[in-house]
Image (cartoon, rainbow, N blue to C red; front, top):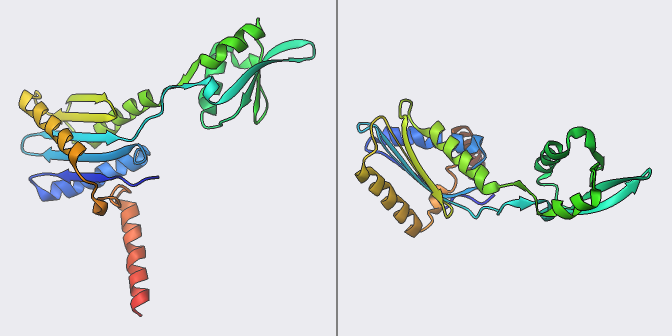
Amino acid sequence: MEPLEIFKVTSPVESEAAVYHDIIADVMSDLRLASAIGRITVEIYPAGSLFMMAAMLRDVEMPIRISDMAAVDTAYEGGEGYVKITIEREKYMPELTRYLWERYTPANVTQADRWTILVRADDPAEEAAALPTHIIANPSQNLHSDMIEFSIRCVPEGFRVRYHTFGNNEFMFIASEDIIETTQLKHAEKMMEKLRAAKPDVTETKTADGKGKREARNKEETFERNREEQ
């Protein structure tokens, strides 16, 4: 997993920034989003009941079709015709299985072995010809939902007025107790512009592990330093 290029949390109240830095890191770790987020900056204004986030995401896979992970053909066993799916990439097996169960019902889907699935269909040849183009997963769509959940879990309780944008691998999120104003939207857009132009800060790359992991890592580093000095 590549480290985050930028991960910064700022606030007029320094202690608030430190607390929310840990909260955001922990939520990012829980949702396993550190590999999807390349850069993130957050500004929190407790007195103004305002939370703003700008994030740049790593390249997201295009929608996954059956042909991206398997070869589809027909097969005959016991005089009966089947759609034969030969797995080439296992990454999206749960999504493929779920899709086949919904389309044909579990009773008509048999996993003959780790790499082979047989599907009973009324017209196996017709189904085998059509299936390769069918979409079974959309990573971009899933990431959009994950980023919304991530943001909601990071904001202070009571910030129920929310606004977000998602597109071109960029995510912007604003939350407040009050109506979100045009000036706040423009400020968040400037945050995104600065994030695009910023140079990676290598001192920030270790800070996305969550508080517990960082404390453990710090103890290990201190132990190693002491051992070297002895």
